[in-house]
Length: 315
Image (tube, rainbow, N blue to C red; front, side, top):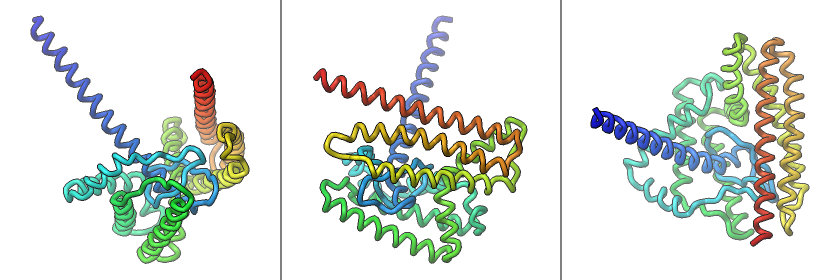
């Protein structure tokens, strides 16, 4: 009896360990993917600026490399970049990665064919085009610029890559559909949020109607775009050198939380003409929880900055 119990415990431990390692590997892969995509998406959302800018968080999509927030640029791990480039030279790995990213991108681009009004085959061609651009980028040596000359050269290279990609997309979609694609791509984060909100509405017995989805996405996207521009202008007005970086980070984060409240008020006003009272109550609760999360993240960063300053002084 004791032997069978010991074997059961051993099997349980092995299963738990295997589950942990599988989870950890997937988490690491996702983290690397998201770090890469944050850089790849920046140019798709906005042209690279000469000064500090603000990069919004987006779902997993693809584009060309750009800038992140001042003082918060995602570091490029040279060892991993070299390792990845070597792996991509292997046909079997390259094809496996292509298939994985194809499925991930298709999953991330919610209702792409339906939203653009294009055949599923053309939507697959669009994803394939973006994926090929991504693999091309990963196959190159893309280290962070070390000085202003390298930064400018990187910016020019990115702008040319963006023009090349846009030309390919126009050739595939046509001018009108290309413009619709740009709007669709810019709204991806909001689409994912509305999709998540739709699940909450369904659970509360007040599901979204088909004719409510696009107007709600447009209303939220308009508010977010307005506030994102305001935050970008405010960010560029701050000092990002000479020891003022810490204060500027704090001022920006404080302003971001303030603008978050303005967004919620604006979204509520716009959505009141789209949703029923019951649906609007669920939306308000969702927006409130999102703002609480953002505020908590700001408080965490603030506490971390204080701790670093105190411990740096002690050293």
